[in-house]
Amino acid sequence: MEYQRIDFKDGAVVVVVAFDMCSSSRVVESLTLAGDFACFTELLTATKHFLAAEQKSVPFDPYKFTGDGWILLFPQRTNGLALVSFLRRLCAFYAKEFRRRVLPSLADPPSISGLSFGIDKGPLIHMTMYGRREYIGRALTVACRLQNAVKDKGGSPAYKALVTNLAFREHFAEAPNLKVSSASRILRNINNDAPFRCRKVVLSWTNAP
Image 1 (cartoon, rainbow, N blue to C red):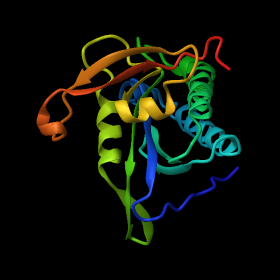
Image 2 (cartoon, rainbow, N blue to C red; image 1 turned 90 degrees about the horizontal axis):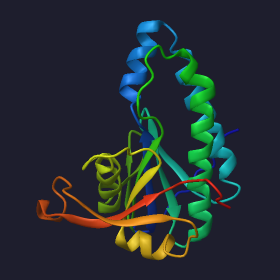
Image 3 (cartoon, helix red, strand yellow; image 1 turned 135 degrees about the vertical axis):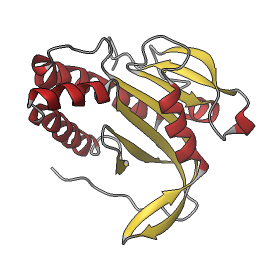
Image 4 (cartoon, rainbow, N blue to C red; image 1 turned 45 degrees about the vertical axis):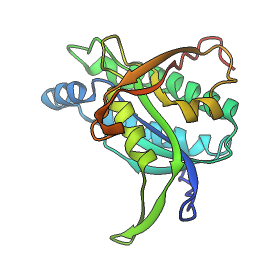
């Protein structure tokens, strides 16, 4: 199943969802040393097919594969309940597939596995680079920095998201069964390196719609 791409207009406001796999460096090293790297590529391929299938439920552009995750771009008016439901399904899918495809091949499984997320919303400018459409904008930078900062201040980052207050208010505030707390992080070269206030959201799929 192939991706469906969305070409956003210049200056379009989008919801940016950046996610990657917890402990991926340790997993890749362990599998490489064991000579059993195929199961990791199978996990990535399965995730790619899952994302392509999910586009029928909630439209988005699978903008960029980052090696151990993706950056997804959602239209400005994406329904919040549909977005949260998608994120929960993605978490549940990954948990199942990681246990099935990768965990049996790990001699020393990491203590933390799962996905971590950073989410922002804002306008993006498009340009062409090497014949491919690329986007630049603060929302992309902030989402990626938030995703990387989920692990800061201790605790497991698995299946948690740092969400800007704007994105939370417009897309997460009405979602049921969400565990939410206020958070702040220092994001390099963002907000003059002052504490960046956001929301920490636990994307548990237990009893989720």
